[in-house]
Length: 112
Length: 343
Image (cartoon, rainbow over all chains, first blue to last red; front, side, top):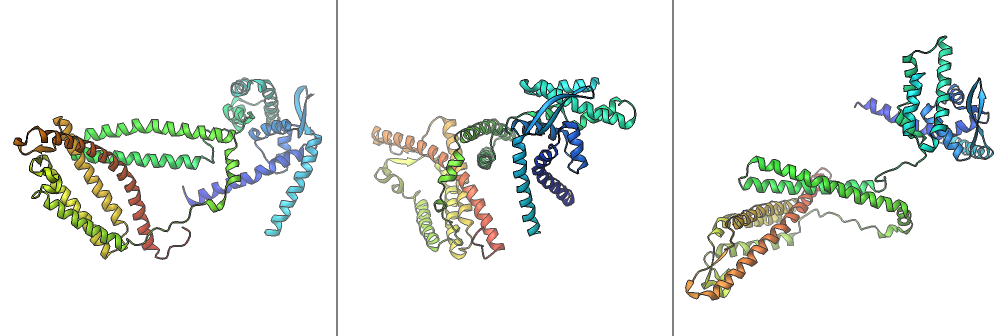
């Protein structure tokens, strides 16, 4: 394995680790407006937060089981789809997480 | 959409039973939406390859299903215990290699063919696999109970930095007193060894007139004398070169391996002949009185030799590890004459 390949791999791993922490924040923020899985994924990708299906759909279910999201099956374009939106508890947590994120951001800006 | 149905069926197989329908319904909707989007973009229905590409992008059914499982990440041996587990496995592996190497040396010295060595290797694997299994089982059980009773948290709370072991600085020189003692002890031992053939009293004491050593001993006498001289030479060299800290452990190791080879040869000849006459009655006229003494002495010698062989086998393994450590430290000191306080 060459040094540049291993550096690239290392960077990729660290980049993914860094983004992983922000994904929950991005999903909660995007679900202030009701959406179903596929459109949510498209919205996130358009905003520069591309996330693969294998990560997003289980994450939605986990956040729902934690009470941060609520969902309902509804018909749209003649098909039943599961729509997610931020729950009341989710709104509180999102606010706290945003404050935390801004604090981290400002600390990092101070260091860089 | 047959391909999609086949895909969903495959995912279903790996999903938790209670959530199967709910997850599949949602997954199916999301994939269908994606396929419809793609078809709208192309202006025609998707062909099989294009459908397969979308499904491939979602991932292997097993991987997709595993992501929907809510169970926490499971380990047989968790990250806290794993370094200890790995350390123990490595130690046991090297002990196994050491025992195998000793056995090989003994087999070669006994004139056994190479086929025996291959048998030895197979025996090593035969022993190593169950050992690996048991060690893994013990650590997995330990990890399970540790997680169940929060043992790591308790340990972390009770831990006191002052209880850490003191730093032991490895000796940079062989002590002069050690070399002098080795020199005196070695000289006396060699003198005794050289005198024994002419003065049996030095072994048998008052019974010297009636007992004598069996002729087999003569075969092992020269190597024993050579080993004693080697020990003496080591003491002399370390008097002149105290910085050669690797020499004592290496000499001990080589001597002990040689003694083991000799012992193995003795014990083999005992087993082969099915008798253990190390000490014989010299004077038949002395009668049954000394026969009993010789019998007890022979029995004691066999037991002692077997115990010594066992003890030495363990010692040799430990000494091999110590010798390697000593050599490594000696080389490091040569490259870095001022060792840092924390290494």
